[in-house]
Picture 1 (tube, rainbow, N blue to C red):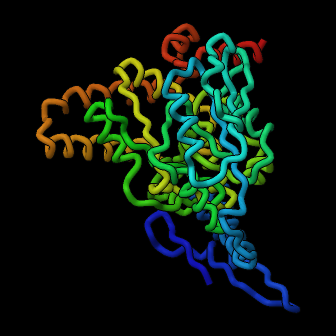
Picture 2 (picture 1 turned 180 degrees about the horizontal axis):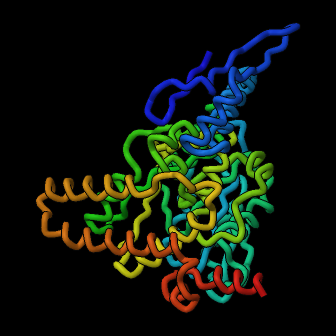
Picture 3 (picture 1 turned 90 degrees about the vertical axis):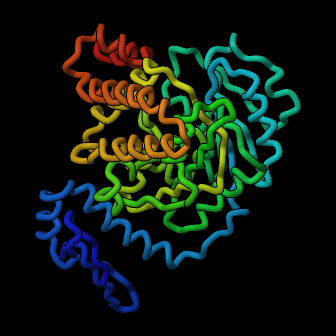
Length: 381
């Protein structure tokens, strides 16, 4: 019998599952459907409860399957690009040095006029597909790459993420040896030019220890349980196809939205600290505002996932941890500026969550993805 935990940590009867054998066959039997409904109304939603039940169903099914070795899985890497610079060439060369074989590197480039042929010189497994800026979408563009792939695993990267060593792909793929894992993402290390405070933020978001995220973690972790980053992430292609790929159109968080759907089906998302990439940005306060505005919009557009899920607790923990670390480093003078940046993050996120109350001209000023809104307006006409 398997017991879950309620909102306050007490065992609840709705997730007591009994394995019964009848004529040599196993079946799952819920002990109280009424209790499921009561728990759902008190805590989250039917979706969450179903996810926990599905998780045990999938586990039982997966436990009877022979586990395939990671070397038996084919891998393609998909990279959307826009005005790529010299570091993109570095990324491609680092992918050639990976210990795990990569079938194809599929590059979906926005605006051919910004592309340089020397990027892929000597990279025989690279294929480039050009689209117009008006056609770019965080979900649809990446999904286009998946359509060109026949690999078992889809590894998505951004043009500015540099593998830290030759084992990034191998370590990421190894997460799929766990029968429940259907998505995995890498640890992001700060680049040499990364500001100190941002480096501390990276340490908070991408710790040294690996872990699994499942639907049961939503109660404790809140929205953090859905975290995944397409800066460097891998997905099971079969499930990706079954789910219809990334949400599209999508202004932001296509990776988190997909991770949430994966968890609600009963599977897990793996954070693989051993798979490392160099990736960081020194954003201004304005850039932080615009990014977090779109983050808030994406959550407001998907209440089926984010409704009743706490989203600000992690931010408070991050502010406290980074402030403490800056003091320990003797860089107390950086704390006020960091707090100001966090204020812009929070302001952008809060306005994004309430974008429906804002006039369209103000939304256009706040977003960093005007193309998304142009598309939305075109759909409404």
